[in-house]
Image 1 (cartoon, one colour):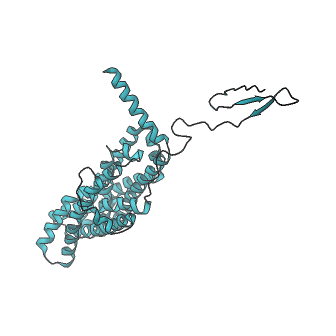
Image 2: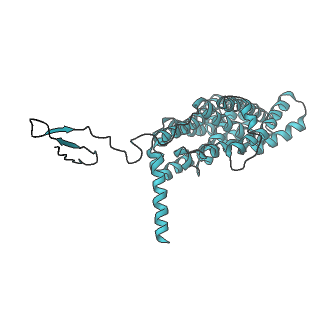
Image 3: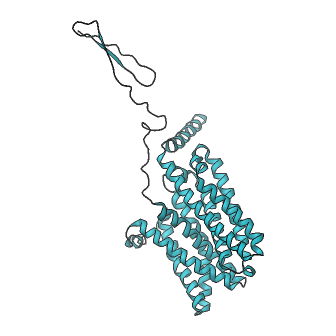
Length: 333
C-alpha cells in the first residue's frame, strides 16, 4: 500500500512522492522542477518566426530606394533653379541607386519573374503591391532623365522626365516605411506613426550627402540645406518614436548603428552648411558622413526589428496593453 504526499513549492511545481517500500518506512523521490514559464512567452520561446530577410538585401534595399527617390526630387529642384551639374549628379545617382535597390529586392525574392508577378494586380491595402507599381512608374522616368542629361539628346523629354521622377521621388523614398510597418515585427509595426518621417529624413540626408560629394560648391546650396533639414527630421522622428514606444523601444536604444547614424548625420549636416560651403575637401567629407549616417540608420532599424521579433516580450506586452485598454474602455461604457 502506498501513500503519496504532493507538495507545491512556489511556482516551480516541485513535487515529492512518498511511496512505501519493503523494509522501509518510506522512500522520498523528488522530481526535478519543471521550467518556470515566463510571463511574456511560452517557456521563453519566440512567439514570431524570425523573418527570412537578409540585411544586405532588405536593409540595402531600404537605403538605396530612399537615396534614389530623394535624389530625383533634389535633381528636379536643381533643374528648376539653374544648377545643371548638381542636377546631373542627382539624376545619375538616383538611377544607380535605383538599380542597386531593384537588384537587392529581386535577389531577396529569389527569382526575377516574381517582381513581374506582383504587377498582375493592384491591391491598395498591400504596401508591397503599391510599392511595386510606384517603382514601375518611377523607374523609366528616372532612367530617361539621367540618359537625356548625359547624352544631351531629347532635352525636353529629359526635363519632363526629371520633373516626373521628382514628383514620384517622395513616394519612392517613404513607401518602404509602410512596407515594414505592415509586418508583425513589433518595433516596426508599433512605430508606424514616426517611421515614414524617419525614412523621409534619412533619404533627404543621403541625397544631400550625394550632392555635396558630386556637385561644385557654387551649386551645392540646395544639397546643403536638404542635408540639414533631413538630419533634423530624422533625429526628431527617432526621438519621438523611442519615447512613444516605451519598453518596446529597447532594441532601438541599444542599437549602436542608430546612434552612429544619428551622430554622422548631424555632424555631416552641420559641417556641410559651415565649412562645406567654403572648402571642397570639407564638402566631400560631410557628404561621405551623411551617406554613411543614412546607411547606418536603415541597417540599425532593420536589426532592431529583427531583435524585437526574436524577443517574445516585445510581442506579448503590446498585446496585453491593448487588451487591458479595451477592457477598461468596455467597463467605462
